[in-house]
Length: 140
Image (cartoon, rainbow, N blue to C red; front, side, top):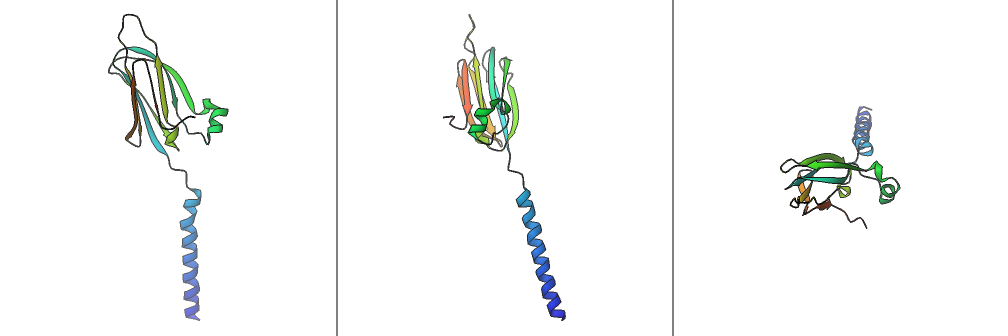
C-alpha cells in the first residue's frame, strides 16, 4: 500500500507543478518594447510633430480612432536642444515620428533630424531641410 501511495503522490505533485508552471504563460502580458524618439535641428525652427505613443491592435483600429494612438504637438527647437519622448509599445512596428517646419526669411534651413531607438537600438534615422519622417512600417 505504501508504494501505491507514493506513486499517486508523485503523480499528483507532477500534475500540480505542470499546472502551476502553465498558469503564468496563459496570463502573461504581451512583451513590450521601449521606444525613444529624438528630434534635433542644426538651426532654430518651429515644427509640427506627429508621433505614436501606443500600439493599436490593428490598422483598422488605427484608422477608426488614430487619436488614441498618435499625438500631435508644436515645438520650437533650438540648435543642440533635442526634443525627446519615450513610449512603451507592444509592437514597435507602429513607432513613427514625423516633423514638418516652415522656411523663415533670412534664415538657413534648420536641417531637422529624427531618430527612433527600440530597446536601445537605432532603427530609424532621417534628416531633411524642413521635414523629416522616421517610421518602421509601411503605412500603405
